[in-house]
Image (cartoon, rainbow, N blue to C red; front, side):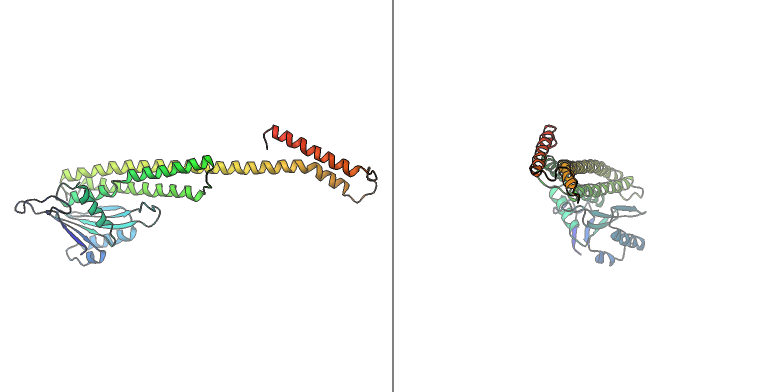
Length: 307
């Protein structure tokens, strides 16, 4: 057993209560192997949790006397990478968190540090746990938005060579986080319905706050996803402008050398009857005319601001 939290103790989760008047539930963190060794868990719950573990999704299922669910928490340092996964089993008198990593332990430590757990019940512990999972995400979105704004300034000012992959990584991160918050919101909604009456009506109602918070975060993720698409369109526009500028220069060079190409083609023919071939100043005249035409075209293009 990785850890046992007794909610009547002052640390780490709740204030003490009178042992004679309250029998607080246990909150346990177990590995998947340790959970599989428990004998009082219903077989269908054990099978469903095993399937959820493989699915790596945010999901909840209500049964007559218990609730099971899973969390798939993106790593905010790399939202598009593999998420941290864990699951839970909730009855009226105990909550079991199944985690082969350390995300459940870290989240419970945050719950203890913030002091948001005010009621020594398993339902309120699950509420505090889910709330803590998304508590600081607005500040993370603010940092992400600042990074995207810096990227936009760099593109507009041509301060850096930005790749399409960099921009699309922000879009994929926003999409992944948006999906995560939508799933958390659906989970909280289902728990708040409290169809199996595992928790009190008041406790069930608190999960509505998580739904509201998750929906706000989902909207923020959608906004940043749209922003990333705007950055991508800006990037593509700049690429098109660079290509147009390159094609313009190539076209001007082609036009400038077209007269020379005509002259060399004319006098390069293997004929002896071409006029001027025996004139001693023909070469100098052709070179002078060519230089004059090039200078005139350069001045013309500059006046048109094509160069």
